[in-house]
Image (cartoon, rainbow, N blue to C red; front, side, top):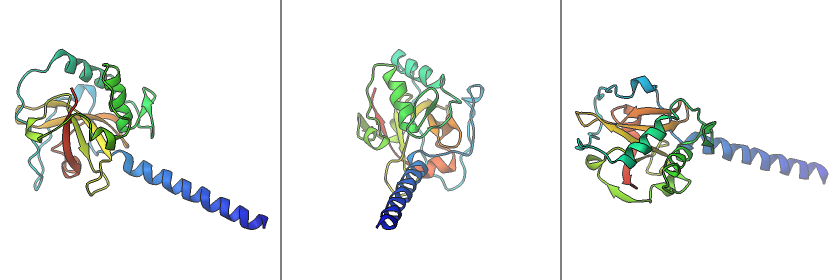
Length: 189
C-alpha cells in the first residue's frame, strides 16, 4: 500500500516538473543576436525568404511613449527569469507589465491575454510603444511579446523584449527567428 502511494506521488512530481519545463521552453522566445544600449540603432540586414514586416511610420512619438521606451531601456541586460516581473529578472510579459505599470498603464500578466488588449493594428502602421506578439513554438498560439522600440529609415522594426537566452534586449523583425515567429501587433497607448 505504501509503495503504491509512493510511486503515485513520484509520478505526480515528474508530471509537474515536465509541465514546468514545457512552460519555460514555450513561454518566451529567444534570439541569436545580442544588442546592447550602445548598439540599439544597428540595422539588421534582411535575410532571404523573409516576410516583409516593415512599418511606414516616420513621425515623432509622444512624450508618454518616450517615457515608456526610456523605462524599457533601463532594463537592457536584466536576465530572464520565468515568472519574473522585477529588475532582478523578467519573463517577456512580466517585462511589458512592469514597463507599462511604471507609466500608469495596466496590462494583463500573460502574453496571450495582452494579445487581446488595445487595438489590433497592421504591421505597416506600427510605431514605437506598440506591442508585437509571437508564436515562438510555431503555430498560432501567442507565447512571446515585445515593445516596438524604433523604426529604421528603411522601415525596419526593432523591439525591446525579455528573451529566454539573453534577457532584456533589442531585436529586429528582420532577424529570421523573429520574422518567422511574428503573429500580430496591438496598440495599447
